Amino acid sequence: MTSTSGTSIKEIINGLSNQEASQADGQEEAPQIAASHASPAQKQEEVAVRAFDLTYDMENLPDHVVSGMSPVYQRILDGILDPIYREWFRTRVIGSENIPAEGAALIVGNHAGAFAIDALMVVHALEKNSTRSLHLLGANFLFQDPLREFMAQLNVHPATFDSANELLQAGHLVGVWPEGVNGVGKTIEHRYQLQGFGRAGFARLAALNHVPIIPTVVIGSEEAYPLMARVEGLLDWAGFPYLPVTPTFPALGPLGLIPFPSKWTISFGAPIAPPKSDSPIDAFECSDHVRSELTQTIRELLSQRSSIF
View 1 (cartoon, one colour):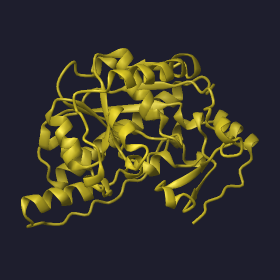
View 2 (cartoon, one colour; view 1 turned 135 degrees about the vertical axis):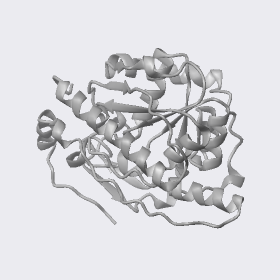
View 3 (cartoon, helix red, strand yellow; view 1 turned 90 degrees about the vertical axis):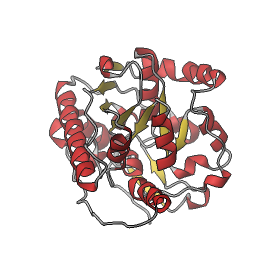
């Protein structure tokens, strides 16, 4: 299926300039609760599928070292991200004191920007403003050759229950973006509107591991890569869910990957306690609470923003 948009580039820029905080809203999916009498192994598999709506060929994935990013890759990534973070996006960070100095926690945030660069900026913000490193949960297509070894070196792990649970039990910060591909792939008319949070998998993880949730908001990613349309099906052969169409990509080829120099704000909110249990009712109640906190912060930051660029 192919999605198209008749919006002109001029209309895009004008629309972005008139961004209103009142757009920061969305609809949550109604929870579907079902009883299960499966074995522990089957229940674990069920939680993984229900939580992330993804499946993985675990036999062909590399071992993921949970102790931290490779020093070589750390230096390379810092060298690439730092000038973008400081000079291009002029990133402002709020609430870094809310990041726990030690111990496991979940970073749960809004997701946007066509190419998921917001996740990398959050990683870099933590590196610059705290003593913590962030481990990310990635979608299936990221773990196909030739990307899978690279992902392993960058602290990106398969979005499965086992992987996330292992990281939390080891005391790491784990980044979760519940909107998933639908968040990254939302077009400009839906900017800063939270998409569905799926089946509250992050809340179940928080409950099982008794770890806090840090609601994290990114402002600026929507304008860095304003998505005009997403062409689905064209890149199925490569495992990619869609081809993003921005004002410059794919029209300008590799040059179109250069983001617009929007001003960024990354806000780490006050920790939210995990659900009392991993039951569906408690998990969805926690998920709704986190979603509400994110929506409120998005609205506040948008209302305070004096300019996009």
